[in-house]
Image 1: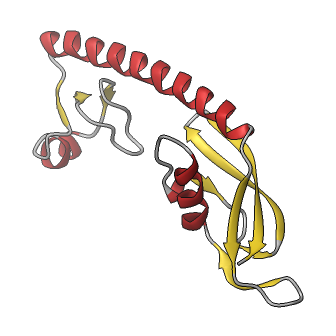
Image 2 (image 1 turned 90 degrees about the horizontal axis):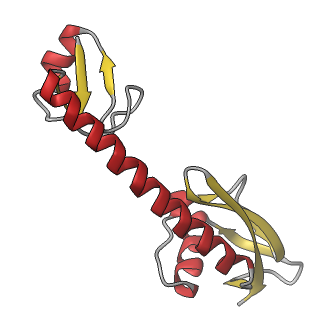
Length: 148
C-alpha cells in the first residue's frame, strides 16, 4: 500500500515521504496512530509541501549547527571531577556531565545523546569528544578534566 508519512518513522522514512509498506502495517499501525495516511492525488501534493518544509528547516538547522560549531571551537571546556593523587578519577566523566558543561557555556542546549563518547573518561587531563550538533555535523571538542 502506498502511504504518505505524517511523522518520521524509524526504518520506514521521514515526514512527507511517499513509501510502499505492507497493507496490514499501514492499516493496523501507521494510520491508526496518525503516523501516515493513504496516498491519494491530493495527499501527494501535501507531501511535496511537507518535504519542501523539511528541506528548508534542515538547511536552517544545518546553518545554526555550523555557527555553533565555530563558537564551540574557540571555547575551553573544563569539567571538575574528584580524583586521587595519582590522577585517576573516582568514577568517570559521563556524556551527561559533558552536555551540561557545554550547555552552561553556550546560548542553546546540548543533550547527552548528542555527545559521542567512545568510553567514559577516567583520568585527569585533556580528552577528545565528538559532539553531534546535526545529523550531518559532528565536531570534535577538547575538554579538560581537572581535579575539583
